[in-house]
Image 1: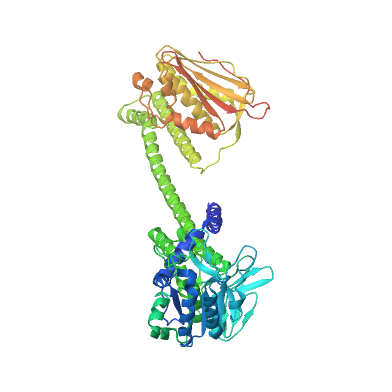
Image 2: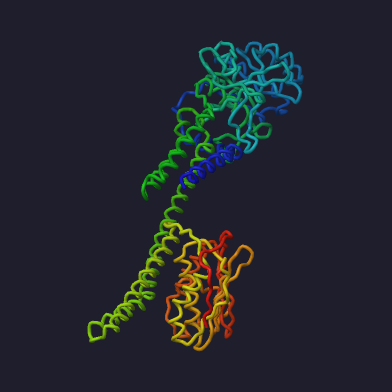
Length: 615
């Protein structure tokens, strides 16, 4: 039982772990977003700001985006007065447009400190920034985000991108490097920028993926139109890294979802500004090693497996609840320490194991309850059997003892009564022993005796015992010649009980002056012992029920014979314990034939040689 329990939990754990790894990504994403929204780190002052080309700016610019470069040049001149640490411009600057505006923008770039321009990743190369602008850039970075393929939520950005031998860092990383006046030192496990370690490993396909810690209140944003109309707004950029980009819904192409999104999207320039804040504040969210998650799940699953068998009743289920809560809330606890702990692979297998352990315990308790009910029912049935089957010998003993005590009897009569009391007492003892042996066999508490039983001798003994009952009803008992070598192996007393029960039933349920015949023969490797009567018979629907305990047939009621309906069920148990079966053929008005089909003993001469015929 214990081995099966352990095997069940191990199988459930392995299956649940595999399923959580293969199909748990949506669950992990949903739990990550929920934790992201619920846990708020300590407030901080953003080190970045956004200069937004919004709808108002485009409406105030004749030609819209086509002539935005002139407006941008004017805005950058105002921003330069605030001495920003770096300026990131996320606009398409690959072509030449209005020469005067292009020159004006190039002049603005020339005096802009730590300028970072953007490039897009094309299928086979990086987009080329116009040389007139690129010459003034301190760095050119990529603007690729990494929306999740399943739900389009942007939780990470790649810190670098490669096309062949060409590498581009993300504009947020370039801005961070320039704002710290440091270089990027790369290793397989992390990036070092000045005194800041960015703890993300290189992957084979997506570069280094950094989880973004979005600013709860958002990045401070100034509309370009407002800046141009109120130059004092430039003070909001003092000492900050300025991200310049399009936020107007009519023009933006990269509106993305974030964990904070609720029916609205975020622009690419805002996402990169949040990525910069993640690095500037050192709020890096790193993934817990898979080995941690596996060991955590394994320990809790083992704890659940131990709790239910060892703890009694409600305490086991309370422990299971505590284990479930631990598996569900541990990822959040780790998240508060900036470690992303997979919810699916930690809580999923543990939940499955707790449910499996609780179900197993419930089934065990129910099985024990059923066993107790069965034992109680068996006890009640035993009492019914005892009170009925023992009534006859007890009555004989009681009546005989009263005769001896009340009347003056001759010595011969006293001897006859004493012999009767002695025989009935022995009969009663054998009956008790048979019944107890059958009960022990049924409960698996006793093994069958194994001895060679002569069929002819067994039939002779049963006929001798059944003859007084048959004589009272003038019923003839006959037996066909039984071969001397017919033998079975088993418990002699139990087999005699089974044969005797069939004989007495045949006599009980047969009319007076009829015949009951018993025969035995060998059929291949089976011995067939048949008892046939000329009684009232049974319908087929009754034949199917006669081996049920306490079932009484119509013939029992019509014959007036009292009975508990337990005798045939005991006979069936005895025969099945000996590896055999009982066949019944019966028709209303034509009698019944009960046949014991038993495995034959190994062929060798039996010790009892003779057969007798009774009629």
